[in-house]
Length: 75
Image (cartoon, rainbow, N blue to C red; front, side, top):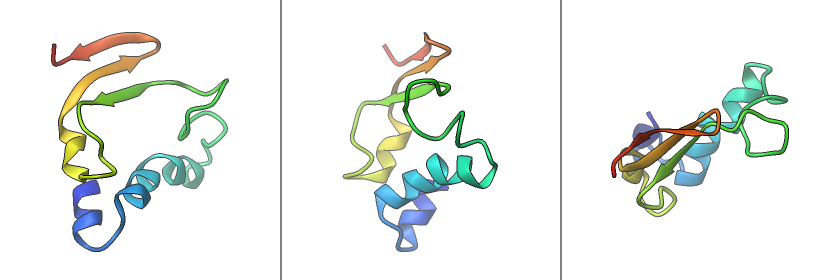
């Protein structure tokens, strides 16, 4: 979906915000999710490339952190 947003004119930054911060706000979960802040759920996807320079880099996952534990890795 993020790639489609960018393909149709949205910036990479705005596409990422749409999927994270804005989605959490829309669902009323912004106190728990959507941004990286103390006290929020901190599940993360670490990428090999910068999605702000090329949104297709979202497909090149280095590893996933779920509840503080690396649960998936391309290593």
